Image 1: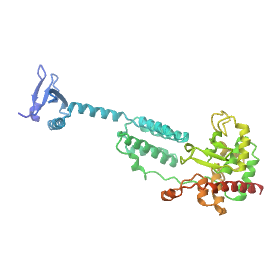
Image 2 (image 1 turned 30 degrees about the vertical axis):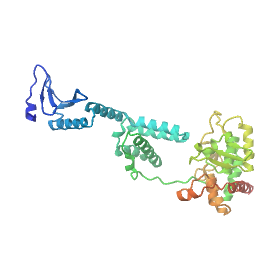
Image 3 (image 1 turned 90 degrees about the horizontal axis):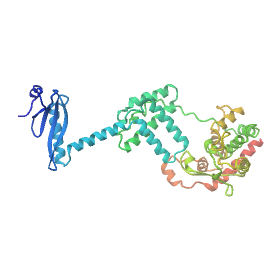
Image 4 (image 1 turned 120 degrees about the horizontal axis):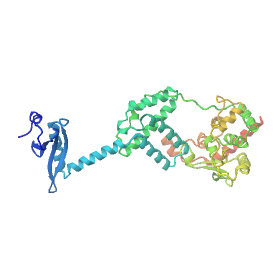
Length: 395
Protein backbone atom coordinates (compact mmCIF):
# COMPACT_ATOMS: atom_id res chain seq x y z
CA UNK A 1 0.00 0.00 0.00
CA UNK A 2 1.15 3.56 -0.65
CA UNK A 3 2.72 5.37 2.28
CA UNK A 4 1.13 8.20 4.26
CA UNK A 5 2.67 10.76 6.59
CA UNK A 6 1.09 9.09 9.62
CA UNK A 7 2.50 5.70 8.63
CA UNK A 8 5.96 7.19 8.03
CA UNK A 9 6.02 8.94 11.42
CA UNK A 10 5.10 5.66 13.13
CA UNK A 11 7.96 3.74 11.56
CA UNK A 12 10.43 2.82 14.32
CA UNK A 13 14.10 1.82 13.99
CA UNK A 14 15.11 -1.82 14.26
CA UNK A 15 18.34 -3.71 14.84
CA UNK A 16 19.03 -3.50 11.12
CA UNK A 17 18.10 -0.90 8.49
CA UNK A 18 14.93 -1.74 6.60
CA UNK A 19 12.87 -0.22 3.84
CA UNK A 20 9.16 0.39 3.31
CA UNK A 21 7.90 0.83 -0.25
CA UNK A 22 5.60 3.52 -1.53
CA UNK A 23 5.02 2.65 -5.19
CA UNK A 24 6.71 2.82 -8.62
CA UNK A 25 10.18 2.25 -7.18
CA UNK A 26 10.02 4.86 -4.39
CA UNK A 27 10.72 3.71 -0.85
CA UNK A 28 11.89 5.05 2.48
CA UNK A 29 14.87 3.57 4.31
CA UNK A 30 14.70 3.52 8.12
CA UNK A 31 18.19 3.41 9.58
CA UNK A 32 19.27 2.00 12.96
CA UNK A 33 19.76 5.59 14.19
CA UNK A 34 16.10 6.32 13.49
CA UNK A 35 16.74 8.67 10.53
CA UNK A 36 14.63 8.11 7.41
CA UNK A 37 15.85 8.55 3.84
CA UNK A 38 14.01 8.54 0.52
CA UNK A 39 15.34 6.30 -2.24
CA UNK A 40 14.24 5.58 -5.80
CA UNK A 41 15.12 2.26 -7.42
CA UNK A 42 15.23 2.15 -11.21
CA UNK A 43 16.77 0.30 -14.12
CA UNK A 44 18.67 1.75 -17.07
CA UNK A 45 20.57 -0.09 -19.78
CA UNK A 46 19.61 -3.35 -18.06
CA UNK A 47 21.25 -2.35 -14.78
CA UNK A 48 19.53 -1.67 -11.48
CA UNK A 49 20.49 1.64 -9.88
CA UNK A 50 19.54 3.69 -6.84
CA UNK A 51 18.86 7.44 -6.56
CA UNK A 52 19.13 8.99 -3.10
CA UNK A 53 16.49 11.73 -2.91
CA UNK A 54 17.01 13.02 0.63
CA UNK A 55 15.95 12.72 4.27
CA UNK A 56 12.48 12.79 5.75
CA UNK A 57 10.92 15.10 7.01
CA UNK A 58 13.11 17.70 5.27
CA UNK A 59 11.73 16.19 2.08
CA UNK A 60 8.06 15.40 2.51
CA UNK A 61 6.19 12.46 1.00
CA UNK A 62 4.75 14.63 -1.78
CA UNK A 63 8.16 16.12 -2.57
CA UNK A 64 9.71 12.64 -2.69
CA UNK A 65 7.04 11.54 -5.16
CA UNK A 66 7.68 14.63 -7.30
CA UNK A 67 11.40 13.81 -7.33
CA UNK A 68 10.59 10.24 -8.37
CA UNK A 69 8.35 11.48 -11.18
CA UNK A 70 11.08 13.85 -12.37
CA UNK A 71 13.57 10.98 -12.37
CA UNK A 72 11.15 8.82 -14.35
CA UNK A 73 10.76 11.61 -16.89
CA UNK A 74 14.53 11.69 -17.39
CA UNK A 75 14.58 7.91 -17.77
CA UNK A 76 11.97 8.25 -20.51
CA UNK A 77 14.45 10.56 -22.31
CA UNK A 78 17.25 8.04 -21.85
CA UNK A 79 18.96 10.13 -19.16
CA UNK A 80 20.33 8.54 -15.99
CA UNK A 81 18.81 10.49 -13.03
CA UNK A 82 21.96 9.95 -10.97
CA UNK A 83 24.20 11.41 -13.65
CA UNK A 84 21.83 14.33 -14.11
CA UNK A 85 21.94 14.97 -10.35
CA UNK A 86 25.74 14.93 -10.33
CA UNK A 87 25.90 17.29 -13.30
CA UNK A 88 23.46 19.67 -11.62
CA UNK A 89 25.57 19.60 -8.46
CA UNK A 90 28.73 20.26 -10.47
CA UNK A 91 27.16 23.27 -12.20
CA UNK A 92 25.93 24.66 -8.86
CA UNK A 93 29.38 24.33 -7.35
CA UNK A 94 30.98 25.89 -10.42
CA UNK A 95 28.61 28.86 -10.38
CA UNK A 96 29.00 29.25 -6.64
CA UNK A 97 32.76 29.28 -7.11
CA UNK A 98 32.54 32.16 -9.59
CA UNK A 99 33.05 34.95 -7.12
CA UNK A 100 33.15 38.55 -8.33
CA UNK A 101 36.86 38.90 -7.63
CA UNK A 102 37.67 35.90 -9.83
CA UNK A 103 35.45 36.99 -12.73
CA UNK A 104 36.74 40.56 -12.43
CA UNK A 105 40.31 39.28 -12.78
CA UNK A 106 39.29 37.34 -15.90
CA UNK A 107 37.67 40.48 -17.34
CA UNK A 108 40.84 42.48 -16.66
CA UNK A 109 42.92 39.81 -18.39
CA UNK A 110 40.56 39.98 -21.38
CA UNK A 111 41.14 43.75 -21.60
CA UNK A 112 44.89 43.16 -21.43
CA UNK A 113 44.76 40.69 -24.31
CA UNK A 114 42.69 43.17 -26.33
CA UNK A 115 45.57 45.62 -26.08
CA UNK A 116 43.84 48.21 -23.91
CA UNK A 117 46.03 51.10 -22.84
CA UNK A 118 47.86 51.07 -19.52
CA UNK A 119 45.65 53.92 -18.34
CA UNK A 120 42.50 51.89 -19.05
CA UNK A 121 43.94 48.80 -17.35
CA UNK A 122 44.97 50.82 -14.31
CA UNK A 123 41.49 52.33 -14.00
CA UNK A 124 39.85 48.92 -14.33
CA UNK A 125 42.14 47.52 -11.64
CA UNK A 126 41.40 50.48 -9.35
CA UNK A 127 37.63 50.13 -9.76
CA UNK A 128 37.76 46.37 -9.21
CA UNK A 129 39.65 46.90 -5.94
CA UNK A 130 36.87 49.21 -4.74
CA UNK A 131 34.24 46.59 -5.59
CA UNK A 132 36.27 43.65 -4.24
CA UNK A 133 36.62 45.29 -0.84
CA UNK A 134 32.83 44.96 -0.36
CA UNK A 135 31.68 41.92 -2.34
CA UNK A 136 34.71 40.47 -4.09
CA UNK A 137 34.38 37.12 -2.28
CA UNK A 138 30.69 36.73 -3.03
CA UNK A 139 29.36 34.59 -5.91
CA UNK A 140 27.88 36.69 -8.70
CA UNK A 141 24.53 34.97 -8.20
CA UNK A 142 24.33 36.45 -4.68
CA UNK A 143 25.26 40.04 -5.57
CA UNK A 144 22.22 42.31 -5.76
CA UNK A 145 21.59 45.86 -6.95
CA UNK A 146 21.14 47.21 -3.38
CA UNK A 147 24.45 45.60 -2.42
CA UNK A 148 26.25 47.34 -5.29
CA UNK A 149 24.47 50.62 -4.53
CA UNK A 150 25.80 50.50 -0.96
CA UNK A 151 29.34 50.40 -2.36
CA UNK A 152 28.62 53.25 -4.79
CA UNK A 153 27.15 55.37 -1.99
CA UNK A 154 30.47 55.15 -0.12
CA UNK A 155 32.21 56.73 -3.12
CA UNK A 156 29.46 59.35 -3.47
CA UNK A 157 29.77 60.26 0.21
CA UNK A 158 33.29 61.52 -0.53
CA UNK A 159 31.96 63.77 -3.28
CA UNK A 160 33.44 61.59 -6.02
CA UNK A 161 30.33 61.50 -8.20
CA UNK A 162 32.15 60.87 -11.47
CA UNK A 163 34.09 57.96 -9.91
CA UNK A 164 30.82 56.46 -8.64
CA UNK A 165 29.38 56.50 -12.16
CA UNK A 166 32.52 54.97 -13.63
CA UNK A 167 32.58 52.32 -10.91
CA UNK A 168 28.98 51.36 -11.69
CA UNK A 169 29.88 51.04 -15.36
CA UNK A 170 32.94 48.90 -14.60
CA UNK A 171 30.99 46.55 -12.33
CA UNK A 172 28.36 46.30 -15.07
CA UNK A 173 31.07 45.36 -17.58
CA UNK A 174 32.14 42.47 -15.34
CA UNK A 175 28.56 41.23 -15.03
CA UNK A 176 27.94 41.47 -18.77
CA UNK A 177 31.15 39.52 -19.34
CA UNK A 178 29.84 36.93 -16.86
CA UNK A 179 26.49 36.75 -18.69
CA UNK A 180 28.32 36.12 -21.96
CA UNK A 181 30.30 33.33 -20.28
CA UNK A 182 27.14 31.72 -18.89
CA UNK A 183 28.13 32.44 -15.28
CA UNK A 184 25.42 35.02 -14.52
CA UNK A 185 21.96 35.65 -15.91
CA UNK A 186 21.57 39.43 -15.49
CA UNK A 187 23.47 42.66 -14.89
CA UNK A 188 22.15 44.17 -11.61
CA UNK A 189 23.81 47.53 -12.31
CA UNK A 190 21.22 48.21 -15.02
CA UNK A 191 18.70 49.05 -12.29
CA UNK A 192 21.09 51.64 -10.82
CA UNK A 193 21.34 53.95 -13.84
CA UNK A 194 19.23 56.68 -12.22
CA UNK A 195 20.19 55.98 -8.61
CA UNK A 196 23.40 58.03 -8.52
CA UNK A 197 24.00 61.76 -8.28
CA UNK A 198 24.88 63.10 -11.70
CA UNK A 199 28.23 64.92 -11.65
CA UNK A 200 28.40 68.44 -13.03
CA UNK A 201 30.54 68.42 -16.14
CA UNK A 202 33.49 70.70 -15.54
CA UNK A 203 35.36 71.82 -18.65
CA UNK A 204 39.14 72.00 -18.39
CA UNK A 205 40.34 75.57 -18.10
CA UNK A 206 41.71 77.00 -21.34
CA UNK A 207 42.90 80.38 -22.63
CA UNK A 208 40.99 81.32 -25.77
CA UNK A 209 41.75 85.03 -25.90
CA UNK A 210 44.48 85.61 -28.55
CA UNK A 211 46.36 88.24 -26.53
CA UNK A 212 46.32 86.12 -23.36
CA UNK A 213 47.42 83.08 -25.35
CA UNK A 214 50.34 85.09 -26.75
CA UNK A 215 51.32 85.95 -23.17
CA UNK A 216 51.27 82.27 -22.25
CA UNK A 217 53.49 81.38 -25.22
CA UNK A 218 55.98 84.04 -24.10
CA UNK A 219 55.93 82.59 -20.60
CA UNK A 220 56.67 79.12 -22.01
CA UNK A 221 59.61 80.51 -24.00
CA UNK A 222 60.99 82.02 -20.79
CA UNK A 223 60.35 78.88 -18.70
CA UNK A 224 63.47 78.18 -16.63
CA UNK A 225 62.65 74.55 -15.80
CA UNK A 226 63.61 71.38 -17.66
CA UNK A 227 64.13 71.80 -21.41
CA UNK A 228 62.06 68.65 -21.96
CA UNK A 229 59.10 70.26 -20.23
CA UNK A 230 59.44 73.51 -22.18
CA UNK A 231 59.48 71.67 -25.51
CA UNK A 232 56.55 69.45 -24.47
CA UNK A 233 54.46 72.55 -23.70
CA UNK A 234 55.40 74.10 -27.03
CA UNK A 235 54.40 70.93 -28.90
CA UNK A 236 51.13 70.82 -26.95
CA UNK A 237 50.35 74.32 -28.23
CA UNK A 238 51.49 73.57 -31.80
CA UNK A 239 49.93 70.13 -32.32
CA UNK A 240 46.83 70.34 -30.07
CA UNK A 241 47.01 66.67 -29.12
CA UNK A 242 46.15 65.24 -25.70
CA UNK A 243 48.81 65.60 -23.00
CA UNK A 244 48.98 61.83 -22.58
CA UNK A 245 49.67 61.36 -26.28
CA UNK A 246 52.48 63.92 -26.14
CA UNK A 247 54.02 62.37 -23.01
CA UNK A 248 53.90 58.82 -24.42
CA UNK A 249 55.15 59.76 -27.90
CA UNK A 250 57.97 57.53 -29.20
CA UNK A 251 60.67 58.25 -31.73
CA UNK A 252 59.48 55.29 -33.80
CA UNK A 253 56.24 57.22 -34.43
CA UNK A 254 57.95 60.31 -35.84
CA UNK A 255 58.59 60.39 -39.60
CA UNK A 256 60.87 63.37 -40.26
CA UNK A 257 61.04 62.71 -44.01
CA UNK A 258 57.25 62.87 -44.48
CA UNK A 259 56.71 65.38 -41.66
CA UNK A 260 54.13 63.31 -39.77
CA UNK A 261 53.59 61.82 -36.33
CA UNK A 262 51.70 58.51 -36.57
CA UNK A 263 49.99 57.68 -33.24
CA UNK A 264 48.88 54.01 -33.00
CA UNK A 265 45.28 53.22 -32.06
CA UNK A 266 46.11 51.73 -28.65
CA UNK A 267 47.35 55.15 -27.48
CA UNK A 268 44.31 57.04 -28.70
CA UNK A 269 41.21 57.71 -26.62
CA UNK A 270 38.95 56.61 -29.49
CA UNK A 271 41.14 53.58 -30.30
CA UNK A 272 41.73 54.69 -33.89
CA UNK A 273 45.06 55.35 -35.62
CA UNK A 274 45.76 59.07 -35.85
CA UNK A 275 48.28 60.88 -38.05
CA UNK A 276 49.38 64.41 -37.16
CA UNK A 277 51.01 66.69 -39.78
CA UNK A 278 54.14 68.36 -38.43
CA UNK A 279 54.74 72.03 -39.31
CA UNK A 280 58.30 73.32 -39.62
CA UNK A 281 58.17 74.86 -36.12
CA UNK A 282 57.40 71.41 -34.66
CA UNK A 283 60.19 69.77 -36.68
CA UNK A 284 62.69 72.29 -35.30
CA UNK A 285 61.62 71.45 -31.73
CA UNK A 286 61.77 67.73 -32.44
CA UNK A 287 65.24 68.06 -33.89
CA UNK A 288 66.37 69.86 -30.72
CA UNK A 289 64.72 67.16 -28.64
CA UNK A 290 66.33 64.40 -30.69
CA UNK A 291 69.78 65.73 -29.84
CA UNK A 292 68.88 65.41 -26.14
CA UNK A 293 66.78 62.21 -26.04
CA UNK A 294 67.24 60.57 -29.43
CA UNK A 295 68.97 57.50 -28.02
CA UNK A 296 65.96 56.46 -25.96
CA UNK A 297 62.47 55.17 -26.77
CA UNK A 298 60.37 58.13 -25.59
CA UNK A 299 60.54 61.73 -26.74
CA UNK A 300 59.98 62.80 -23.14
CA UNK A 301 61.52 60.23 -20.79
CA UNK A 302 61.08 60.38 -17.04
CA UNK A 303 63.86 62.01 -15.05
CA UNK A 304 64.16 58.78 -13.05
CA UNK A 305 64.33 56.26 -15.86
CA UNK A 306 64.49 56.38 -19.67
CA UNK A 307 62.18 53.36 -19.79
CA UNK A 308 59.11 55.41 -18.80
CA UNK A 309 57.66 58.69 -20.07
CA UNK A 310 57.51 61.87 -18.00
CA UNK A 311 54.97 62.07 -15.19
CA UNK A 312 51.40 63.09 -16.02
CA UNK A 313 51.66 65.93 -13.48
CA UNK A 314 54.75 67.52 -15.06
CA UNK A 315 53.04 69.75 -17.62
CA UNK A 316 50.32 71.09 -15.32
CA UNK A 317 52.93 71.67 -12.60
CA UNK A 318 54.96 73.74 -15.07
CA UNK A 319 51.92 75.91 -15.84
CA UNK A 320 51.40 76.49 -12.11
CA UNK A 321 55.08 77.40 -11.75
CA UNK A 322 54.61 80.01 -14.47
CA UNK A 323 51.78 81.53 -12.46
CA UNK A 324 48.76 80.04 -14.25
CA UNK A 325 46.20 78.54 -11.85
CA UNK A 326 44.09 75.48 -12.61
CA UNK A 327 41.15 77.85 -13.19
CA UNK A 328 43.09 79.68 -15.92
CA UNK A 329 44.89 77.04 -17.96
CA UNK A 330 45.54 73.30 -18.05
CA UNK A 331 47.72 71.12 -20.26
CA UNK A 332 44.58 69.75 -21.89
CA UNK A 333 43.35 73.31 -22.45
CA UNK A 334 45.64 73.85 -25.45
CA UNK A 335 43.19 71.73 -27.46
CA UNK A 336 40.34 74.08 -26.60
CA UNK A 337 42.54 77.07 -27.48
CA UNK A 338 43.20 75.57 -30.91
CA UNK A 339 39.58 74.55 -31.52
CA UNK A 340 38.14 77.91 -30.49
CA UNK A 341 40.55 80.14 -32.40
CA UNK A 342 40.69 77.94 -35.51
CA UNK A 343 36.88 77.88 -35.70
CA UNK A 344 36.62 81.63 -35.04
CA UNK A 345 39.02 82.33 -37.91
CA UNK A 346 36.41 81.08 -40.38
CA UNK A 347 39.20 79.80 -42.62
CA UNK A 348 38.78 76.08 -42.04
CA UNK A 349 36.10 73.45 -42.39
CA UNK A 350 34.87 72.41 -38.93
CA UNK A 351 35.37 68.74 -39.87
CA UNK A 352 39.05 69.38 -40.59
CA UNK A 353 39.43 70.91 -37.14
CA UNK A 354 37.62 67.96 -35.55
CA UNK A 355 39.86 65.46 -37.41
CA UNK A 356 42.92 67.38 -36.25
CA UNK A 357 41.71 66.88 -32.67
CA UNK A 358 41.07 63.17 -33.37
CA UNK A 359 37.40 63.60 -32.54
CA UNK A 360 34.97 61.01 -33.91
CA UNK A 361 31.67 62.08 -35.47
CA UNK A 362 28.89 61.11 -33.02
CA UNK A 363 26.19 60.93 -35.67
CA UNK A 364 26.55 57.41 -37.08
CA UNK A 365 24.85 58.24 -40.38
CA UNK A 366 27.02 61.30 -40.95
CA UNK A 367 30.14 59.38 -39.90
CA UNK A 368 29.38 56.71 -42.49
CA UNK A 369 29.54 59.31 -45.27
CA UNK A 370 32.35 61.45 -43.83
CA UNK A 371 35.10 58.96 -44.63
CA UNK A 372 37.77 61.44 -45.73
CA UNK A 373 40.12 62.77 -43.09
CA UNK A 374 40.53 66.22 -44.75
CA UNK A 375 44.27 65.54 -44.89
CA UNK A 376 45.28 68.25 -47.36
CA UNK A 377 43.31 70.85 -45.46
CA UNK A 378 44.71 69.60 -42.15
CA UNK A 379 48.28 70.08 -43.43
CA UNK A 380 47.47 73.68 -44.36
CA UNK A 381 45.63 74.16 -41.06
CA UNK A 382 48.68 72.90 -39.16
CA UNK A 383 51.00 75.34 -40.93
CA UNK A 384 48.54 78.20 -40.42
CA UNK A 385 48.16 77.45 -36.72
CA UNK A 386 51.94 77.36 -36.19
CA UNK A 387 52.30 80.72 -37.98
CA UNK A 388 49.38 82.17 -36.04
CA UNK A 389 51.03 81.21 -32.73
CA UNK A 390 54.24 82.90 -33.90
CA UNK A 391 52.23 86.08 -34.54
CA UNK A 392 50.62 85.91 -31.09
CA UNK A 393 54.00 85.32 -29.49
CA UNK A 394 55.36 88.40 -31.26
CA UNK A 395 52.44 90.45 -29.91
